[in-house]
Image 1 (cartoon, rainbow, N blue to C red):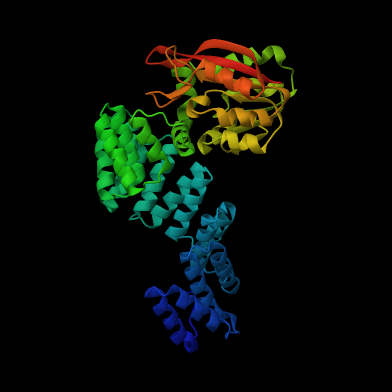
Image 2 (cartoon, rainbow, N blue to C red):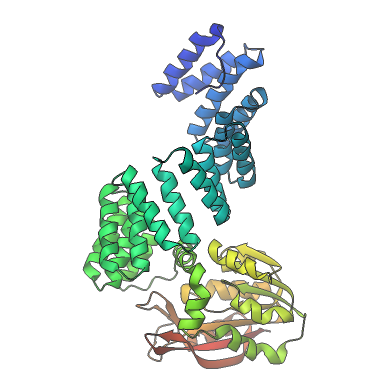
Amino acid sequence: MSSGAVDARDQGALNQIAFLYETGDFAGAEAFCTNFLATLVEPHRQLPVHNWLGFITQRGGRLDEARAHFGRARQIDRRNPRLLVQLGAINDSLGNLDEAEALYREALRYAPQAPVAHYNLGVILQKKREWTAARRAFEAALMQHAAFPEAWLNLGNTLLQLEDARAAQECYQRALAYRPGMAQALHALGLLAQRHGRPDEARSQFLAAVEADPTFVDARLDLAENYFTSGLRAEALAAIEAALAVDPQHETARFKAAFYRAENPPQMPAAVVAKVFDGMAASFDQHLVGQLGYRIPTLLMETLAPHAQDGAWRVVDLGCGTGLFGVEVRRYSRQLVGVDLSEAMLAKARERGIYDELHKADAVGFLDAAGPFDLIAATDVLVYLGDLEPLFSAAAHGLERGGRLALSTETPEELGADFELQPTGRYAHARHYIERLAGNHGFALETRKATPIRTEANAPIPGYLYVLQRQ
């Protein structure tokens, strides 16, 4: 685990460090390193000890210390590509993506054929949503080392983001050719099949992924959802209970279990919402507007128009998605802020170039920390929230006096409860509930308008638009 030539005088000490590390005595290895380092003056002799301390502290989760030790090693051995890759990985784990990218690119200057450096660079570019560049990086890794299943898997994931599903499928199959039973590749093939309307094939892949890795909770969750949407409720509940047996505190699994049991959980976890919309971002506008007849942003802006003046409002668009409401309200905004849980949706919104700020955040948490605004809009957002008490409280805090809260709700005629999780997995809210919350939090009802929210199975879904003014 060291870099460069080892001074013969230090071989015995380094062997002792290796022995302590490999036998699991990490505290002993660290103490030995620290004591030994204190006796060394020459930088080339300090180098392998800093490397060992980097590995030891990294293994213990002390990433800032690991970065410091590898950084000192880099000062001594500046052109060692393995060291640069290791330091890049630490920065990746710390969320320092730009620094990690720079380190991987520097490593490739010294070792342009290093597949791991190309692969790690691709992972960073994926996280930065630079899909074309990520594709090039994974392809470069595979040019140097074709038998690299992780690179095939991630190239497939990248191609999927570039909307080349056929090529993505081929990549997943190549990953499996090099590593039969690779659970992540089986799961990815299942997701592809599910996406293209082949639920039986998807189920087979999810089952294979779970068999390959029984601890793979995401595969168990998707298997459960596959069963549920196929009408196999008992099997869905059994699958979700198996996921909970792996991770009893898994927030998404607990929510899904309550949903499958026809309970009425008060909130949908942020992770569930983010996953749904990350998967829909590429085709969201076409699907929602083109296929489901979604016009709420336009209708809500028409409702607000009598109060609007060009460039007058400070606006926050909660659950901004790709920016459909942002397009409608931009001309009336002196500042337009978008908030969403989905990074993929925010990327699409960013492409429109209409928002002054975009934040990946929970709506309630954002409003508690930001403001005041003249308009808070939440179009097709309440269907993912359930209990709205926290939202109304945060909105009252986040609005100027006289400011407006503009909402859409899904409200079936037969709904009696304040809110109810529907079989579609979306929350419906009763009219009396919205109006009671408005009164409790100092809002006057300015507009209530019945309107279809969208179509589903060729039938309109009833709901309401509300404009509430803070008194």
